[in-house]
Length: 470
Image (cartoon, rainbow, N blue to C red; front, top):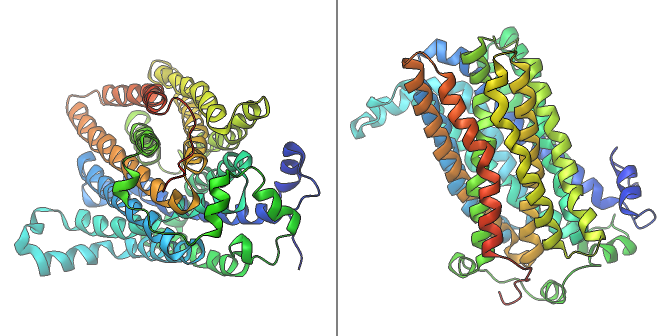
């Protein structure tokens, strides 16, 4: 059967020196990229509609923070179990169920008011009547979305571990992770137009159904490598070319369930979890609050902020793909995969410091914070591509999704903390008449988080060690 190249595969083969080995693994990478794009399209709709919904329903910043935090908290808990479920069901079935659930969650946002009214009527006696109907309805819809979306990264990282040798995993992760950027770019370019043409409910429905289209291609093209008829012998051999001996032995044995308690005994698990806790909230903040920032501080309307947001998120693709390539430079110089990745991550951790200049230069033009935050967000994507891959560097494949789930839960809880802090600060300083102070505090936290995270991670795992005794 034909093995058509994704558009990015030819230059990647030249970059990695793998021409003639085979190319089907990049088709899998393309599927992961498109799923991640859909994931972030669905996730971004609410933040873009915030100004309209805020005016329509009378939300405060704290109300919006409650809705966003409910998503993040549910996502965090979902990630813990999503990793376990993906490990149990396998990548193909686990990923399919995840995108079905999150697509349903995206669509039911359109019925959030009816959901809230129904819950008030049925369960008001347990105290739900204190929560505004619109807030309650959106909390429920966001929670369903979060449970499904929690499966995306554990499944995608597991698929990457299955289809790529270690030296290519951060590059493949960077490529599929750039789908977060494409989703974030497409959302401000499409959601305002859909809302203007057909209303806010249509924006949730139209964007939500896209995920169901992806399922057709996933079921058609994905199988585990050992069952994949489209994969050549040479490419299958190449995928296993730099696997640890323990990893190769594991592939031949029946995979057994690894308990969370056992995984938490390893410093490698804590290193990943703390790194995610410290830095995921930064990306959540950029994703959920930037439209509000442009509205609050520069009084831009939704249609006016579409281009600045598209430019900002477009910049992050450079970080996602470039960050995935960066450790390859050090690995080719003789560093092992972990040391090369950590060296790259240290350099990346300095880049977000430019966000400290966003507010001072923002008095000149809103384009200065847009571009500087774009650099910081780009650095996050570079960091993200590498921190995910530290898991597949150090853990056998049977535990990868579970460890990613634990770290993802920690990252989600970090996101809850950042979101609630932001909502509280913005309401406080808005009441005082200078909301820009709240944003200055939040940007400072975002700027220094990566260096602190790197120091802790390096302190926990100073040298590479593969976990072979699970």
